[in-house]
Image (tube, rainbow over all chains, first blue to last red; front, side):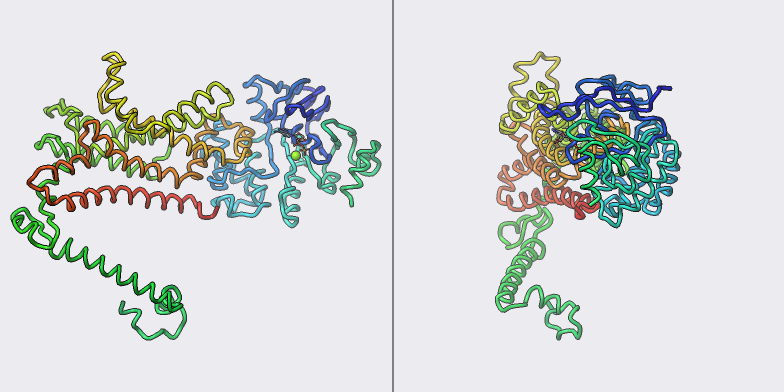
Length: 245
Length: 360
Ligand SMILES: Nc1ncnc2c1ncn2[C@@H]1O[C@H](COP(=O)(O)OP(=O)(O)O)[C@@H](O)[C@H]1O
Ligand SMILES: [Mg+2]
């Protein structure tokens, strides 16, 4: 077993001329919940999208559960089998029913037989309290329900790591809580979680560690108490003031 | 129109209220409605008297043709075999009928969602086409050999259409993905191929396939003329359909593939399970439209010497004997085309509802 669940070493990333990640070094421990904050455009999405290889990077090292994330397709596959991701826009497959959204990736992604996959899917959907909608299509349920389905879809593959990219940013205010509740339950288990979020109350409740990014770099990291009540870096202070008001 | 003449119903939701709301709400609405009513009546009664009431149906009564006022359907009774089977040998027409039914059954079955899997659809079509070719061609088990030059009529039309569709569609999918390839060479070459085939008239392509290719290719590579024509036609169809599919692929948000990737779904599954169903769903009306155009365009193969249903119809009125009855013959042909085209568009409409396109 590798020393850290996820380990970034001086990671750099460019979009053309734009330097999107600057020398990012960061270790995430097993079972830890890491919250990533920072203003829009600071590179939060880019950072977590590197973890499962949705983005390539230009320099530095990145190892996930002992696998090197890079050009090697086999290593990437090994990583993706164990890393789940939940997006801001849910990204459910609109042409498939809710249950099929959860079943198909199991069949294709890890070769689970359909009967077993259906059982797992239903268990996860029930856990996310959307089991009753199993036969509906995504556009027939609310945003909060869709996001919980997306969560169930990822969890059906039994990941060791979950990545959340602003999972509640596209939701109407009254639905945010229902998604945060099920996420909070997840953080109590031994899953390793990276969550990009602007929900500071949630972050404070669940985070083991908080980092703040600005302009592609990590400007400050620390435990949630310190980060939220006594930030050291001026950018962090400013950001915390902005999100509190 | 007895309903309209009834006294207004007590409630405002009856048929009378509906009619009044939609057809007679203002005086000019009323006038327009009456004019169109008269027009419809005139057309329908014309069709009824000419096409049915006064029509001559059997060859025995053919002497009346041309003198009476009714349609002379006797020509269809007399020559339907020529129209439906072309030059196919008379005693073997049952084979052509069966072959035709086999392909139609395959078409209908492949419209059923039950068959939409990676394995079932290809197997269905191989069996369907295999049955068609074996039956049409014969040359085994005591069935006399009938070469493709003698194939004709409706079964040829349907065969060409479905072969073009079935060969062209996978090719279109490949072209669409190739044109979106991240390798510039592949994308560029595919783009040129598509643009060239779209800018050439279909007739040119078919001529080249029928006449020019044999001059260029060695004998063993030439194959059969019908085969070459179908391949040329398929390339033409694929070039157009590829652009339709590409538009469909472009309309899929990036997040769909990203979700599939992060769920570790392999590339083929991203294509087959996620991208293609959505691309087809997004472009269903254009795809059905392309199929309808292709069906109607099959008549162009006449020019390079194939005796499909349109050419057979021409042959019927080309003989002096039935030369006066061209209206009846072309109406009959139009009816045949109508059945297929109408079927296709109804199927498209059904698919749209099924895929809940209406919900956006
Ligand atoms: N595909 C892309 N092409 C070009 N620039 C991009 C792309 N994705 C993100 N960027 C840029 O990189 C920076 C960081 O983006 P992102 O990681 O999405 O920020 P965040 O998630 O913190 O809002 C932004 O300035 C953004 O404009
Ligand atoms: Mg972002």
